[in-house]
Image (cartoon, rainbow, N blue to C red):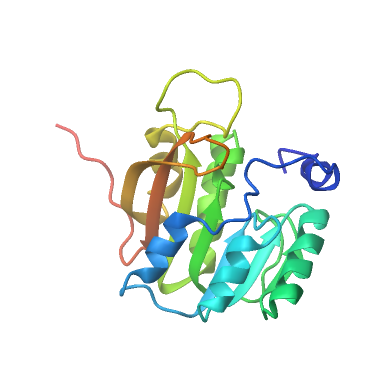
Length: 208
């Protein structure tokens, strides 16, 4: 993984800007859509489990994964306190084994964008594609290149970065401008990317 101190982030005791304790509004909106099938859900980069526990409360069979064992421990404690049946595992999403597939929903809030290398971004998308059930949906929230310069906040990815990684293996249904709700008045701009399993392979771009 590209960030070796994620575990330190969860053991430092310092507030984490992405760990707000509030369910992500984009996920709530998607789950309210009549077209979303309630089934198996995977959260990639689940952190302390806020979204995963909420998904379980909506009737999903949920697995949350994170590269940081300390985050997974806190997520399990959250689930236990809520009486939730969702499960958690500490693993490298790009290479770890997930026997629970396929999933009807894959969700990541700022996990895809931590990878700088285009090859890793493509591998992330390929991994999602391999785990989705027919009709399955991937919702990803990705730091965007929109807005002014900033020294802190989520990594920034262009729309081209996103499309280059995802389009070959998944059909992009929506790529729209939005923002992260990180609390404390922070609202970095983001992409809301909604992708589905392909029924047909992506066709080559045409030229004259």
